[in-house]
Length: 424
Image (tube, rainbow, N blue to C red):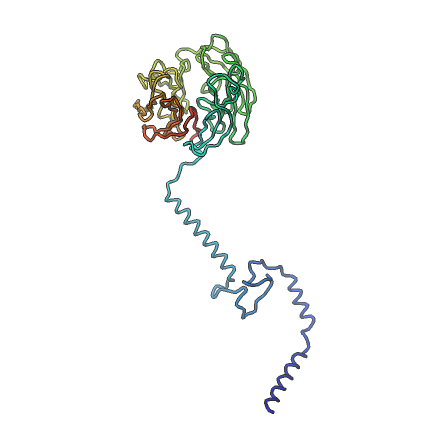
C-alpha cells in the first residue's frame, strides 16, 4: 500500500497547488499597463515560424529573437548588417570591374545623327544605329505631283551650334509655301514657320534662325519656337541671282547673301568689299572666330578674322561652287570637296592647318560623286554622302586618315551630326 500512499500524496499536492490564490490584482494591472505602453515590433523582428510580432519566445525556444554569442547582438540585426555588407561588396566589385573596361565616350559628346530618308526625318545614334522616326512624309518626287508638298528634307548643318535644336524643311515649290520645322530636344517642343530655300541658317548663339520668306527678296528672322523677330528686304542687284541662302556673320549682327551684307538692325544692305572673305561664295570661320577659310578659284585660302595675313593652304583642286570648307571642332583641320566639278566623280580631302599637309581620303572615292557633310564632334571622322553606279546616294563615315569607311544610312543623301560645345 506504500505505493498507493505515495500516489495519493502526490495527487493531494497537485490539488493544493491548484487551489493556491492567484497573483495579486495590482501586479497584473502593472504588467498590462506596461504592455499597452509599448509599440508593436516590426514583423521582420518576429521569430521564424511566429505568426504574432509581439510573441516573446521562452528561454528554451529554438526560435525567436536571440543574441549572437559574444556580440550581444540579435540575429535579425546581424542579418541586416550582413546584407548591407554584401551589397557594398557587390557594388565595389561592379565598380572595380568597370574600371578595367574601356570607358566609352559620353553619349552627349558624341551627339546624334539627324537625317532624311524617303521624305521622313530620323534621329539615330552617331553611327546610324537605333533610328527613331521624328517626322513622317512621302518621298520627294523629281517633279510636281499630288505628293509634292508632303516630303521633308534638309541641307547643310541643321543642328544649332549649342546642340539643343535641329531643324529641317518641308517641300516648297510652285504649289507649296514651304515651312521650317524646329525641334527642341530640351523640352520636346516642335515649332514651324513659313520659309523657303535650302539651308537652315542658325545664328552663332543658337537663338535665331534665318530663312528666305520671299526667295531673293525678303529674309525672315525667327526664334527657335517660331516667333518672328524681323523681316529684312534685300534690294535688287545687291545679291547675285542663284541658289544662295542667307548666312550669319560671325558676330551675329548681319546676314550675307553672296556678296551682299544685310544688317539686322535695319541699316541699308550693301555689297561687301573684295578684301572681305565673305565676298567669296565659299567661306567659313574657325570655331574660335579667329580665322577664316575661303575658296577662290580652286584654291583654299586661310586668313585672319580681320582679313589680314592671307595664306594659301591648298594651291589647287578644291571644288568650286560646292559646300563651304568645314573646320574640325578643334580648329586644327579643314575638310573640303576635291575634284573638278560637282557633277563629276570627286573625293574628299583634309588639310592640316599648321603644316598645310593634305590627306586625300582614298577610301571615299567611288564611281559617283561624294560630298562632305560634317566632322564628328570628336573630330576623328567625317560624314559624307556617296553615290553608287546607279546614282543611289548613301551616308558614309570615314576616319580622317582615310581608313575604316563605314556605311551609315543606305539611301540617304543628307544628314548632320549633332556638334556639342567642347567640355570645360
